[in-house]
Length: 412
Image 1: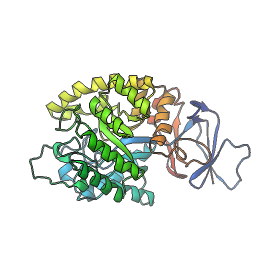
Image 2: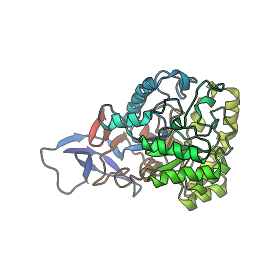
Image 3: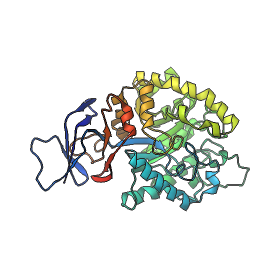
Image 4: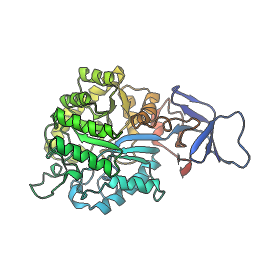
């Protein structure tokens, strides 16, 4: 049994920071917060002093298998898709996993391999190794390979503009055209351990694909993807920047929109009406290292990013269910909390931003019964930050203490 003591703790449901904090942990669960009766003398006490305890933060949009060591800050290597073999890439993912955990993010969604692997789901392998205790890292909700049409935004060949035949890719590796193929692709990912499905619904900014606003799958294909996943009890996340693609995804019953940069007021209201989640990845619109990309990609960013910054305050005001996600390594792994600061810049209160990275993210992965709160019965994912994050959310950038599942991984 472990007893954590601190000056304050965040009651995310109430939207308040309370004093003092005494959190009792037994095994991998929280058993009490500020109990009337003190735990037995045999309990291990950790007095963290003048800090605020928070639930472990969550990043609902990242890719641990790219970026990190060996590449420039803020972007993966331009040739990562063809130079890194699956074994090397997975080892790099292990490093990124530790970096992410040390930053206070104890749960993540790894949204979509977009590299050639021969059909191996590297993020599932990384998740299994972390769960087995072989390597420290956050809880990983893996998507396997992103489902994308040939030439779509998450087709690995379009990032390097490879000629035909240079990198043959299979349905197992995410390239799926037509309803039979997309059904087979979704089934393959689920068969081999995916816990969420990622689909490339529109063009993107950082690929040599179609324009960011263009819809890349038909309505019938979207419906088939959602149907296959939902019958297996799996949710679907869609990379969708263009308004038409976002609307098509909502109509198909897709659960979460990633980015949503060009959503109109009417589409924002559709998200509210359907309960569709939005992972806005807003910090990358000001921090992405666009100076290192091709001129045509810089031009797309210059057109899209200002519209994205204008969209998010409207979504916040409308009451869209916004979860925290960074699209790391679009920003460097380990700097995930900068997304919370950006959410506050776009109109959230600090506690709303913390809620986006805890309770709302837990709801998105259907784990809000055991993650996202400091409460009895919840998993003991607990971090400490200096000061009062309800006044200055930038406190989450400095995390001296990290516990996941009752195990202390970082302590100053």
